Length: 438
Image: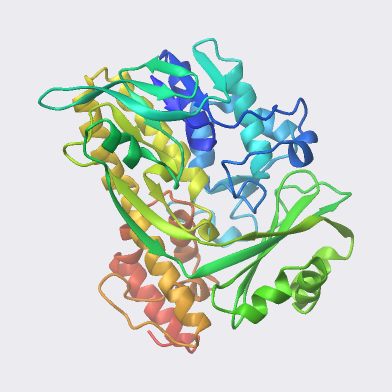
């Protein structure tokens, strides 16, 4: 098996597959040296292929569960590097005995720290051949009733493979690979989020623990998220409408960003004993994207993580979905099916388990954009209540609080939250009592 791309999804596939007894070649286009220590990951590790490398980062409970199952030692190394588990019910003792309360634990760290620990684990696996500064540029395909991959072309020559995993992210060039090989490219659906975000990093002397909650503030024209991560590091991020040029200009500079933070009372206390690190990080051109192989795409070509389903990073779903996708792929590899059957099974799993998160995120983005514009989306069969009303109602309804956390942490599928009659009734009743429209 060849894995193209050495970010979270590619590293997870390589690590999980190798530990399950499969031989893997991981081709990573970036050739910059990997730091020898965790402190160097922030200032000394360049990752040109990962534009969000130094943006805010979180891993939902689903991602932590997959690591705990497949690679518990990686979690231990992350904790040694300063990452920490977060009990999401720490402040809600009334919710602990509710159905579904188990497993609501995240872990938090900066993305460079997660990638560095994963990279160290992969490099130590004897079944993984790690090829740095090697970019996959095309497919080698055998003709037949159903074309199948037999390898890849790279900047360093060809590599044989009966399975090729595309982990090159949202900007994957897999369509070009297919066309040049004479096979059908995948179909792609892209939905612009119409959003941007700005992140400023901070560091304080005292390390964070699982007792430090994040802060999320819904402002009239933006959303602010302050997220404690590993050691004493935390990020402050403003999500904003892409068209608001005035707000964008104000947040681009550190001084302007700090001024905006100080204007939010609940956020201003965070920076009293912390120092800003580096400059404001900007992220634009955010899109939700769905890429699905066609029936005539080559057998054995398997897109994972953002190369298959990419969701707006402001909702923090990407890392957990990548880990879950890698876990599912290795389960199917273990079944030992031939490439065409494997491809069909993996595509079916992706359609059932990942594509709903694409559609869910598109709807969440639409509600956010409407709220920033001063409007309220009308109820629909897909959204019988608003996300805003759901969050408000969780403050007084412990059962709904657990159900919402399970949905937000990807432990339950979107339909299990939005279409459950008891949840619909609870939100309508709660939002009415709180003064919101059902």
